[in-house]
Image 1 (cartoon, rainbow, N blue to C red):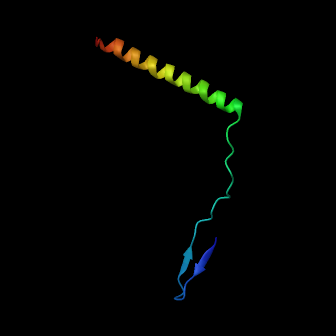
Image 2: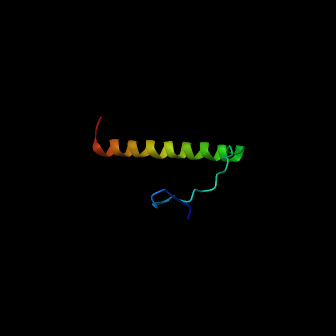
Image 3: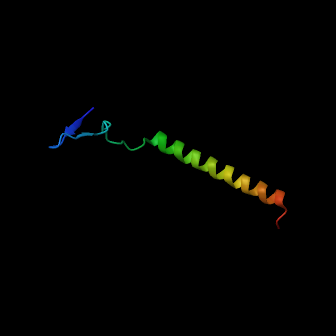
Length: 59
């Protein structure tokens, strides 16, 4: 573990830093999958809202 020692003899421990990497933009296939999942999520949320309104009897 990396550490530094000060003049008074104190040791300062530092966390080990993770390796850095560049993020890559999503491919066309991944973008399409994100769109499909977003549409499915919106349909699911819309259906849940519809069912909750229908059950509550609010008009």
